[in-house]
Image (cartoon, rainbow, N blue to C red; front, side, top):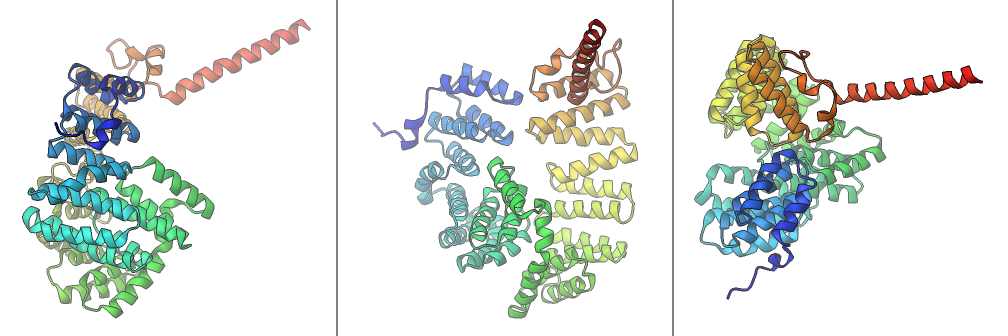
Length: 487
């Protein structure tokens, strides 16, 4: 008989875990909990539950659910890798490492790839930069068997990790902040590891920026608390840290292009930082240097488009974005930028909406394009277009807090389209997303949206609280009047 995996010894009885999760799980997790009571051996349901819990901020519970999923199918590499990814997102590094280490010698390139990503994230978070660089180099070497495009992204991370390994943490931060996100735990872990090292070395403002960048990659309660505490100690707003560090980044990239004049990435980064600081002429010169070395660089063309936009040369900006999109790894992001430029600089809402739809042709799940299209359609009075964008966003979203707001917006749009029954269904879904019983006790709540009831949005929690406080104050006034009259 095979010996149990060391992690399985810590797994409690599934029914006990389900009872514990039921007391705190978000509403969206309830159907999964009920399904698992019927079939606790479904590894896929445990992993789906873990993902829902993780996205709603229940990180400890998500890790527990993921471990249960793995316990149901310890030999399934897909479940194992899903479990390890959730664990590393939630800083359960030791458990994640135990899971993936056997896969580092697997014959399956995809399994080795994900195992290396997990190891890279763990090493980077811990500031073990030499080991992180080795894992990254292994990913680049493996990419020909898995995905050359993903390999390019890790090839771009190698210089960042080499800088961190040499102790040049500020430079590593500047360079990583200029890279497009990969959507994996790796970048968040790198930013977190850099933040820890920068804080230890006294570069506390840079540490705030690094933590803020990590939170952009991953909504994490622990990181948010660390960021708030550090920012409060420095008397800065976290969202302004990057702007305050921009002159330092500018100096870094100016020096870098002097040391490495053939580095296209350095020239593009210098152009981007210069543009952020309003140095349009320097940005134009820097991006020109990049394009001399690689006329088809999509990154350089994208920055040049932004420069032309700042100069008011919108036709040229549009042409540069089109040219960049044809060669970019993720053209949808450039079309989103094109939409923003048309809206912000040219006040061209219809053109911006068309650019969003082009982005969605490349990636139907591009949340940035859907969110912008939602807002643009509302401004244009295109209710059906807004409804389509909202419906697509709702299908992708798993955070109950965001779903509540989206369902209310969806209900408003459905009302404008005359679909009152569908609008009421959207309102009911919004109430479910509120994940509480208090609203059901508000007088008249069930009548909102019905033919015989009042029209419009339901009362907010703030208005209900105000109504309650008003009653209390009225009672106090009446009591004082009675005492005054009797005495």
